[in-house]
Image (cartoon, rainbow, N blue to C red; front, side, top):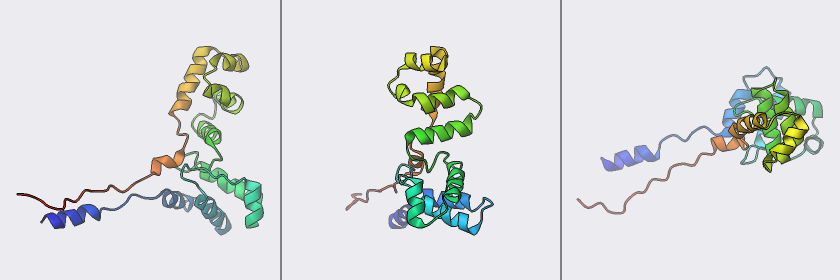
Length: 171
């Protein structure tokens, strides 16, 4: 009976992969066949953190693709779950997430675009001066940014559980 249970535990299904999750969402969008193919290429280029490191002009040149179409599809991929996927770096993924979650917050967007390095150094006084807002408001914006996911792909980093099988059992 224990062998039967062990086989059942070891054969448990593995969770969905990030690329599979993104592709299933991409196929639900109203896209042409060419745009879906571009999306598949972009999704295949994601690194373990969820970024696409290759600059778009280089990618389009190497793959002989229209840069406008690639940019359009990439912007759609950014909005898939997890949001911010396919960005070029941490600042870009934070910017995308903030734009989607709080599109009306002008100070949040200015903070990310113009003062992100100051935020990393916790230089709130300089941010206050640049944005002309109070330190409490900067702290609230920083709290919101802290809740965002800097590496969107880590939400899907799954490792299969390794079960320890004893060599001998003493009864």
